[in-house]
Amino acid sequence: MCRITPHPPGLALRRPSLRSLLGALAACAASLSLVACATLPSEGGEGSVPNAHAGPFREIDQEELGSSRVAPHVMEDDDRFARDASVIDLDGDPSTLAVAGFFAATLHAEGAAPDPLAPPNAIVRHDAADGRSFARSSVTVLAPELPWEGGVVAAPSALLVRGEIWLYYAAEGGIGLARSADGAAFEREPAPVLAPLASDEEGWERGAIPGSPGVVRLPDGSFRMFYAVASDGDASSVGEARSDDGLVWERVGGGPALAPASRPGAGALAGEGEPFDSVAVLDPAPVLAVSTTGRASLRVYYAARDSAGRSAIGLAARWGHDGPLQRAVAPVFGASSALAPRAPWVAVYPGFSLLFVTQAAGTREGQGYPAVAAGVAPADAALPPRTP
Image (cartoon, rainbow, N blue to C red):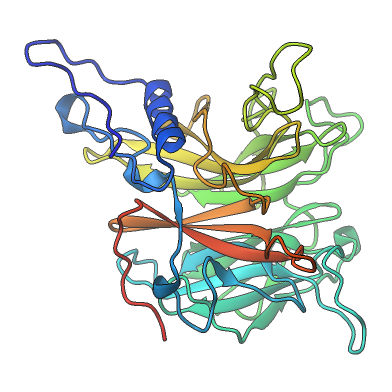
């Protein structure tokens, strides 16, 4: 097990910085990616950030998965291509496991051939009594209806708000919101809640369409959104916005909340010696956390890509809910994967966390369509019994 070395007796203790803690996590991930990365308490017994439940993640095992699913995939649908999971605890109690999973999907007319490259045109709900073994039956909860959606509803981000399920989603014209009392019948806002900047507005993302929202509600009742902003070529960054009511949003800062890491100097081969997130950071998934002494932090999981086209899942974090994000220098999942993981979502339970990612169903011919895989942290976590 990888540990941060404690201070020798007699030396004054100093609170470790978030950067050093993320570095320790990255070192653990790089040295032994399938073993839990432990950190020791800092001054006053306060747990470090991130802790063992933040990653790295191992793939879920077959004996941990039910509903006739084949590990590590908790969702594999070669007809509608359900992907980009957003999972919420149905009763708001993290000690219980029943969840609703919202997935982007591509529906097609009867008799038409499924097309994994077609954009998502529906958001569907699959439930799981054990938090990960999603039922094969589903309900379509959202389909494009409004002109600004452009025939696309994608990248769901669901959360519970005052007894309702709020479902943020990406469309052709920006980020929308639909709300439901029962998780099945949703009423959407008539316009995007986060639209592209107008031509006369100044901003680093002017001309880009915000997408792939990840939304959390802070303890004071306000909301924080992270979203993807595509730029030239394959590049992408992550923006941030805040809202008091979840409806009216204000962008935060004069630049990205998270941008691609710097590449090595000229002359290096593609992918050689460069950070895993040197070209694109996208699909942000924020998670609130609290240390053992009650200190709040915010983690943002994200998809990353380097100049060689390799993909992985990264992690950035900060103490509190405001301020700069500090990233880990190594991925928390998918560092050696050929399946191009993206679109992370993390569900936190007492004693363990589950990571859901979209990736290729396999490496054989005909398996390039998207599926949803699951990971577990810490690696030695014993998951509760699966659903048969």
